Length: 457
Image (tube, rainbow, N blue to C red; front, side, top):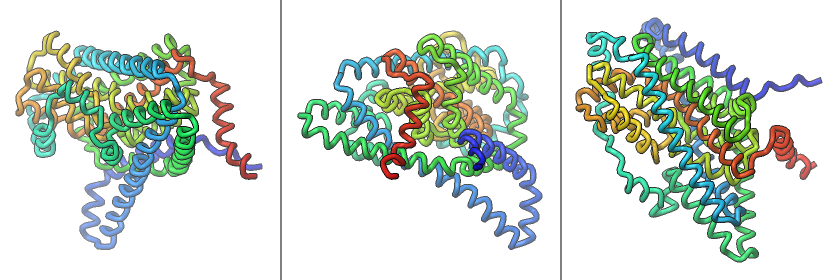
């Protein structure tokens, strides 16, 4: 009798833990290995090959997910909008979705500011250590400070509409892809049924094909996650991590409050769903989000978990989740609030209630339309710091100090971002009557998995 296969999320978790152990060991042994490699050309070649192969596998996996992200949004949203036949319902879903996203983002920032006011992480570093850490990474953050610009609400709204939909697809501009797919899907409802039907059928077939690609890519996820985590931990400075432990724990603590406290409460109140079902369904997407630090790269897996595991309808999933990957940045926004207070405390800059309310507003607006890619939080942080009048030298020094642990915190906040997208999709689906029960969702998923076997015996 065949041994039952370990569930995917447990495989990913094991790969992550193995990568964590290997990465930390490589970090601790980096100096001895480098010295040994310098004395041996063969050892140097082997060491270089292992490092490059590790990075290649992880980057190839992420590229495969990004390859799938735009097609799955485009085809699923065209199918969902064209089959809706109710523009009022689509408008209601859109209004409700954006409203919840904005409220949860503002709430997340407020929680971050509250935690940072209690722990005061900026007071735990001496001026000497502050200046030394700032000097180590000053060159790395200079470009980010210069490139950031304050968000313009009108320009952000205008940018939702693509001047060239094909360019939006090529650049993976998710907000514009969502708009183009919605416009095309709604237009199909106005076309005579006999002419629209072949187009919708083609979109449905392409969407099913993309879902199969997701399944294929996810087969290598455990090994790819191992490579991604090992790469990050091998390059993470242990000294910097220990120096910024209070700051890091403050950010992670705020993220845990939002992810394990606020989201389950909202799910219970507005969707009637318990946390165990939700987190069990979303675990593969959460683990992948932690490994990749990218909401966009995780998007195909997030959509699959929301639709197949949580039982959210395709029309709600294909609209709410891609929109959230661009608009909803609860974890990133919370991190910005904590980081802004940390830098202010570090340099002895007082921020009163008005300044902190400005941080809430600016971070909420800055999160709209920001790409869900690694490291974007630092660029958004510059905008937030500018809103409360911090000078260039303080911004450069403060961002340079937190630069060393940013990737680790980026991994954590991406989990919150992805979890928030799924939570909002579940709540919206429940309010629209488009959410299946646990048994119904499992039965539908099993039927879809077995459909090709039934058709091709």
